[in-house]
Image 1 (cartoon, helix red, strand yellow):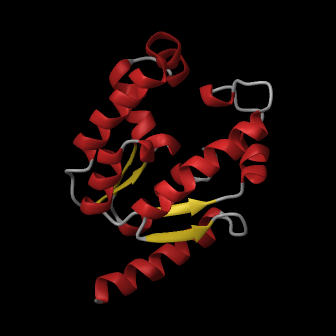
Image 2 (cartoon, rainbow, N blue to C red):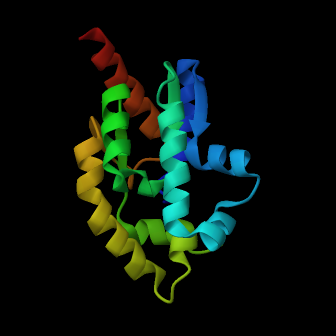
Length: 163
């Protein structure tokens, strides 16, 4: 969370002439309530079930750019599906930088804890190996602005398409 998936994804889709989806936004659209409300009513497990269903439905589409929620990799079926049906990019950003980007965002239920930085460090330690398992490309998202990341992805995607 806070790595820039939506920002980069939206710009990449525009440059590639593809439709952009954000799985969290799709869940909000389908339920009619914000994600924190889903967490309050259904808990994280309920949200993850909705997320898996949304990923299953979106991943059957061709020629889209999909930004997922940060916890999507917790589900092995999500990891398998994303890896097999698309070109997955992991925007790796250190927890301290994620904290700076998200500390004033009240729309992050997993960070409603006394020490959000420690929580981000825990999440990163848990999820980083899963992201790496799923990704076809790992990008250091800590030093480049979104447009620079998009340029890098376009170069990598162009090389992939030439193979």
